[in-house]
Length: 380
Image (cartoon, rainbow, N blue to C red; front, side, top):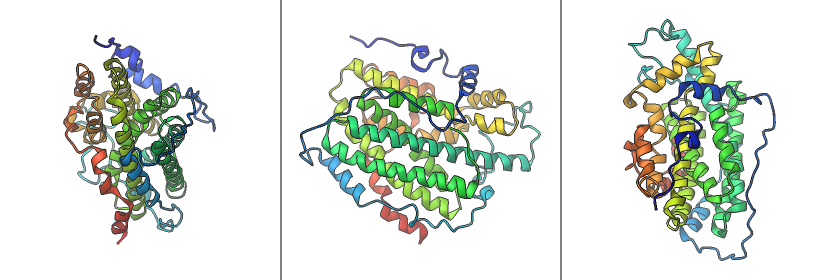
């Protein structure tokens, strides 16, 4: 029997994925931007296992052993004495000079139509601070989610590895917070779309949903985003920081792929549809996150026309957004989620124009290329 069909309204809270008014209105619901604490109900059971047989899942054991020898120290392995010019550390227009994701020649009515180089220079800096801030908030989400995996996953090999990831994520929160504070001197609150996704992941009682939401979707996107920034930045401290973090993140995503492959092979079509819908919801939330609404607001630019412009661009004019899904789509395919049942997730990824990445290498295979020992070559 085919799984029940849920509407987009039920999955993502709006009938149209590109409903601009709802996207903008959601961003205005962040009522606790000045609060220090944000509480989320965690509905999961903490599971003890009395089966301590290490190595029952050899691939996870190998990942755990690799993690133990790949630790690094944020205070001593990075040279924080390096002077950083925030304007030059990550100029989003450096590579091609194109502003295609923000401005179109056939839209002279956009609020940015009369911007000169000074305005675009400020926009590039604010976008850099905004992205680094969202990385920071996402890493804290990963810290909480991985601690939850230690509690909820029933396999001892997975608990062992997840414990190493908790240490990794604490280190990532440390380095992004330090870079923002000491080198950029400014930050942004968490984006509402990211917060909604993290809340959903933590709130779900099923351990595999924590894996899917964080290890596959959020961490997969982060790995691609870090890679994009690593390729563009000429700043040596940021470049080395990102290379260290990427080495960790690749293991984290591989952890999700290796764990869920086994579990998903035993699920029913209806159970897999729930995971497909969750993956789609996460993809939409993360796309909405990168609409840069908070940056436009800080720059004094009306948000609606800029979001409308971005969403109306053809896929080939949104290279940054598209590349973010280069890790997510092949990993979903590796897990069998693309074509499970009637191929529902494949059709949805086609609709948001990211299916082209399905045959890119999945992180379960490529994480060896990101190992920490390679970082030495970056600073050589």
